[in-house]
Length: 193
Image (cartoon, rainbow, N blue to C red; front, side, top):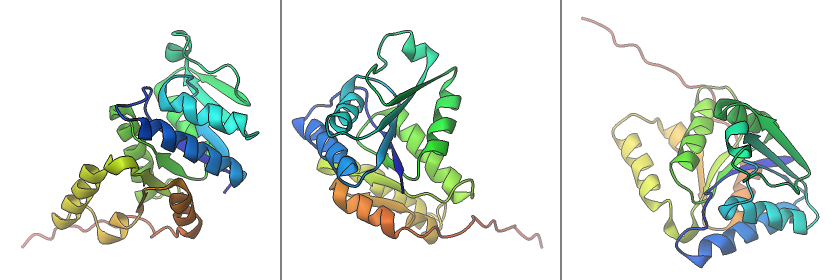
């Protein structure tokens, strides 16, 4: 792995632990020589992760759509900042640039990005690891929902196991190093009698 995409909030959240864990993740990326790929903003824990990697001498690639660039929230001190037209282009480029995907705490945008890369892996558009950094139990309810999807047979066991979860950045990145893709999604046809 050479680059990790991080999806996370454009705010700092209610607890100082979110800021602290964003810093810890940034330091761990630098320690392992991994480039950060992220949404290109200077705000929230997005900006904190980016600043931490830059301060540690690491590389940071941002991808920001013109809509957000025009709102003057883009980070101007990055190693590279790609400016794209749409959110779809942003997500596509981030997927191409990264070798794995981590969701720090965030809102609906973070969830949407995480579920897209997870689904793309499931159907074979990539075979890269997807992980939740479960800071302060932030993703406990989502993890329970994954269990519910599996129990209700809307998520096969091999794809349930594809979701990597850890409370610490080093632990999650260790799981990424060991990740083996379970293979393409198979569909069962319903036979009519």
